[in-house]
Length: 423
Image (cartoon, rainbow, N blue to C red; front, side):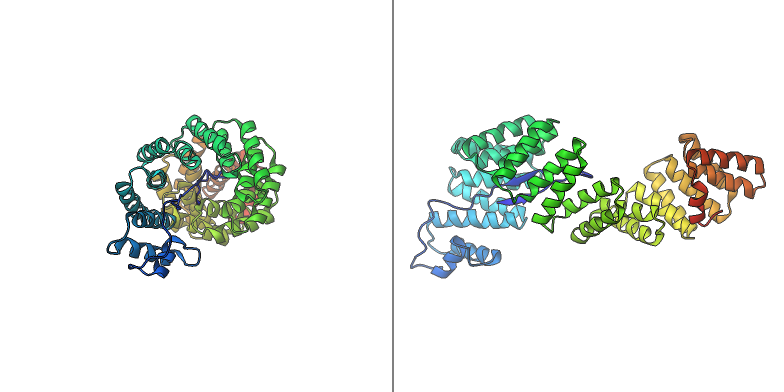
């Protein structure tokens, strides 16, 4: 079996696992007098004592051998295609399964596996067509029903996905993956009770099923059961210490519970395992910013933007951070880029106003703070920043009015601006 994961933003749910069928009952015995050698054939058909590259080489030799039996070539295409699929070399996999179908049009396994290859390539309709054919050939193939269920789930058709998972479970009621994936489809429909029952069943069948604990944690979170969600994520991590998404989701729960040091530790682990997770880099940056560790915050925003250059919120917060660190001219560039993506955003206008305030361009600062407040009158930073700009222009009455309004929104605003290097 090969896994393919999809996670939602924040506390997400891994969606799929797929079955790759790599055994043929019709594969002949290993012994053979013609080329390739018995050892090469064994590397293709047995495979347990070789790595994937050696197995592919062995199967390639079988396919290319002069006078190779049709059954041998069919088995070699099936196995090599599955190896290519496991290496995510999708086009090569499709080519091998297509050749197998040409040789053996009644190979259910070939259609199951090519269907999965099409699904990974994004050809969902082609995938369903192949899986329909696999089911027509062999209706009692649970993997065909299961993989078609995954494909319907990818299409957003939860009802058809559940119907296919039901059929897979009727044919094989002891496979924990079938319950796990059906639970995900129930969750997509908002049927959290049925989803929970499926995750419980998956865990009962396989108590070491890290993914099922992860998905059950998502279910608990949706029901407002943060403690139970944390427990399941901790179990998931214990079972799979390299599970980046579990650290990511636990970090958010810990952050929301105010356990900031533990949250940072989990974000560190998540990003060590998955450095391109820009959402976690951004979230960790926000924690560092709130703790006034602006250098670390800037590093995280840099990481976010390297991976996702059009992340408007990260551009805004990097603009603000650069202003705080005494680099307001650089900050302006980020604010302008953010506003091109989110025109008129109140918080970005506020950040740009701070840049102008730091640069001593007080009229421009007042204009931006005012525009931000027109969009959102409760931004304490914009009120206090505008007050400082007015004071610089000797408008003491206007400054005092803005300071009072800012403190009414956030009593600690003066201390916050002290951290910004502005009093």
